[in-house]
Length: 398
Image 1 (tube, rainbow, N blue to C red):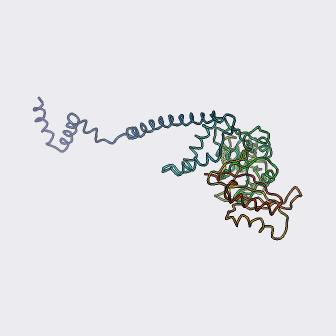
Image 2: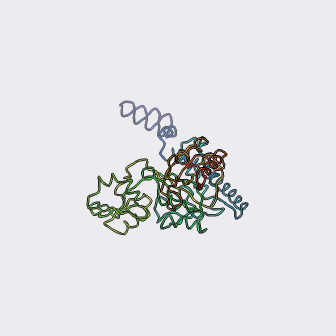
């Protein structure tokens, strides 16, 4: 029967269409598995090996994460009631991760992932309480989360003063306070508070600042007032001058988070704030990235009761008091330059105490326990009446 069918199939070759019919029939009955193998794979079939591999990798990652967490918990038990947060150790871990990273993740992405992992592990030892200038949605809150991770318990404060008082009173472990902006300079209130506080700087955060114009609706013509922190208004001044009608008022408030909160309560108001604030207060983004400088960055200090050890890549912040006399600057700088110590900040402010005419806020490279830094500070104390070490801390990793 099989041979007869093959011979009878010769009739298909009498016309071209017959050839095609024969080939179709031939593949259907005799080579259907070979034919199927030559068809392109579906998207799901192509993705399956990768998804299977990812599932297995995720299983391994979860196992390793829990192993790491168990070790962190054991360390916490050994420490007892001692200090659980060591900024220098965390900085060393993050720099080591970046040095080991071979991609495709960027160094910054790898550091962010490990920061969150360390945050969760640290919370197993003891959750940290971090005070910041609120309300929710401020850039200071974003800086606190960047530095401590999302496992930290962040407490919003009405002022920078209040955030430091909470730590001084033992009601919070650390405070995060803005110290300077790349375009608008230092935050005066923070500098003034550093003179009198007993807290020590134990870390710093560098945060890229992107300002957005936020509103309850999308009709820009209805806007009559813009709320923002004074520095945000200054950082967006050129954009506002070009785009805002003359009748729209600009009102300075205590923080950009507060600006967003006010805008969420009024149809004729908008705010300059972060995208996080837009999400928290359910505001529309009328204009994104309205800052005048694209590399706009704010630096924050982390303040607590503890002194940090050397991390290998540190910075020390000082306050020096000196009279307004000829040659004062040279006398202050000379011990640092002779020791080969670089300065990353040098700013003067009038003294509010009346004891010295000027206070100089200085950031230098190195740790207060480094021999050459100690020698330079000793020489500096011999030349002026007031030297306060705000703290030595690891340079921001990312």
